[in-house]
Length: 507
Image 1 (cartoon, rainbow, N blue to C red):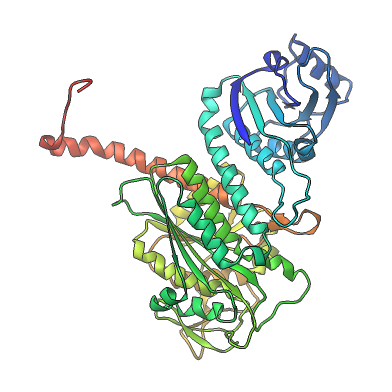
Image 2: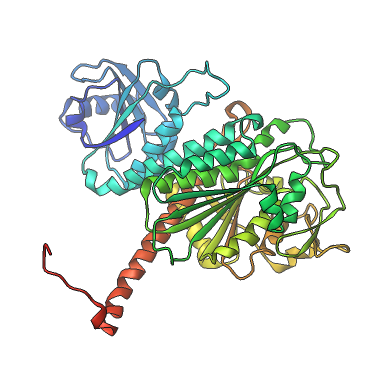
């Protein structure tokens, strides 16, 4: 699907030929003397339309309009949140038969964040999972024109939102695939496909390489499955090679039975979503490939299945992690932290600026925060605040959780350096404390996305979160680093004038 940004207002958009014209009517709408503005004013006056987000009025071939269908939609205050609500309410309209070209216009003020919400909202509404459901009704929509008074002012947000939409769609697609269509090997192939883009490289390691690295915790989880593990390493090199990277680590359990500590049968099918952390890393790299920011990023994905066969790790077993720390496996269903701890140890080889891991880690986080905000744990306040800000800017929300040292008391073991669970109280916090034991002094954050990575019930499916949050965070870091570099350049030139090369214009 293609998005275009075009200079349009209520007067000029009436002449746009399209299958559907969507006009977002905010509380700041001011009636004008053009036909479309008068129509909106009349609908509001007669209470056939409300500006409350999601309220809509559909018209077919209205006089004076080139559009075949006109959909007036309330957009409340016109901010990103209200626009997302408005588009979610009319999502079926973007999948209607015969709707191939859509024009979206604002009847009121336009902000960059609202423009982003339109792009991502339509992309989300258009997405339909089809891999194992080929007869699913798909959208015919191929082009969306977004009309704004001043395209230049919102162009950066428009470009970013398209890239984020691509990343979210990739993450949703892999999250939605059944486990037999998303094995560790298949996930590795998806990562390799990303290496076709400029500045993206991919390396995939198998069981032998992982064993040589001493990743005993990761190996222990994978032992019970017939599917071989894969350790995926993605690199995006958009800055100088000497610049320290930011590292993303995504949990990639392609199916989680719980192992010997087997899960209840009810809703166990949803454990195919246990690799959504890995899927989000793939999605972020798709966005980076599109945007090509000046930054270096490493993506690590430890991926395997957690199965209960005769070779599977048992409760009470003690395994040795890559860090050398021993772990008593008190519960084999706490496997995500076992694969992540070895990946976190490995990540330090890159001498990163910061590490962020993303995992569907604990049911306790679902109880604490539901499906609205992801749980955010950070060892560094600046990093934590930056990630929170990125969540607010992107609408992919998170909430800061505690990391007091006292929470680690429950991880003590009589038979190993630490146990892999700390009991029911504060389960999401003790899981984070476990991971923190493997990162050392590197600024680190953990996103527990167990409540936000997918939805259950009638709307069952992956959400693609937190691709938007992470992409916005990385872009902000790229901008900050560029600004720092520009400030430092004159000082260096002044200190070492003989190293400065000059040339005539055109030389």
